Image (cartoon, rainbow, N blue to C red; front, side, top):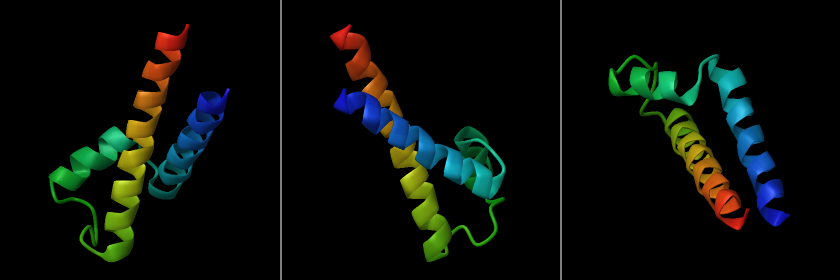
Length: 70
């Protein structure tokens, strides 16, 4: 059950970033890699990038764990 709560939190963090930037993480990463994100090396934007990526990684890991448990 703890995994489900963590999964919910990871998805909520993703929704917050999607609302803030108006795109999915995949689109944000593509724009990031292309140098299209304004102030991408500012502390705030870089921190958002790493936290968003962590939320995506957490979701993948938790989904894998949940699948293995079922």
